[in-house]
Figure (cartoon, rainbow over the protein chains, first blue to last red):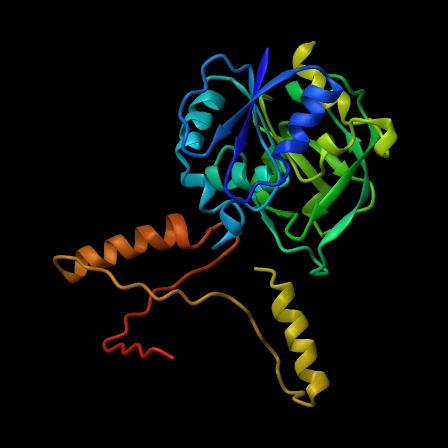
Length: 217
Length: 75
C-alpha cells in the first residue's frame, strides 16, 4: 500500500510523516505537491503539519483552494482514509470535511510539549488499534489549536461518537477538551497532536505507531 | 466570539494607565479594489469573497464598508 503526503509551500512535518511511515513502519509513501491532482494508487492521504502558504489570512484558509485538495475532498467523500495533523486539521475544517475551527490558544502561547490524551476510537478507522478510554501521549506543537464549534455542532459530534481524542489536561482552551474529531463515516480524522512524532521509543514514545499503522490492519 | 489577543491588549491598556477601556477587540481590516459592471455585482462578489475566503464565519464576524474616495500614497 502507498500513502500520499500532501506538501504545501510551508508544510514542515511532511518529512516527519514520511520518516514515521517508511522508517518506522515500512509503509511506502508518495509526496503530493499542492498543484498535483493524481491520487491514483493511494490507500490513504495525510495532510501534515506546518504553515501552509505561510498561514496567511488564517491557518488553512489558502490551502483549502489548492488543486490537490479538490481531489482529496473527492477521495474522502468516496470513503478514502484522510488524516489531518495539526495544520492538516486546520485545513480539514476550512475545507468543510470536519466541523468547527481552530483558533488562537487561550493563553496566546505557542505550546510545544507532550500531551496525554484519552482515546475513544468509536468508528474511526485510524484509531482501531486503541482500546476505549486508553491513555496515550503524543506531542503537541501549536499556537492555534483551540477547537471551537457551535453548541449544536458539538452536540452532534458528541452524540455521533465523533469526539475521538480528548486532552486529559486541556492545554489550549479547546471546548470539551477536544484534541481530535472524526467525520460521520470514520474515514477522516483531524487532530492537533502529532502521532508521527511518537513512533520511535528512542525519541520519547511510540504511542503514535498504531494510529499510522492502522491502515495496514 | 472569543478574542484572547484583544483581552490581553485591554489588560495592557490598564497597565499603561488607561483604565477606562471596557472593550477592546482585535480583528483584520482588508482593503479590496474590485472592477465590476455595477454596484450590485460588486456587492455580490464582495459578499462571496468575505464569506467564503476572507472570513471564517464559524469563528469570525465580518462587515463591508464602502470607501467613496481612497487615496493610497507610497511611503
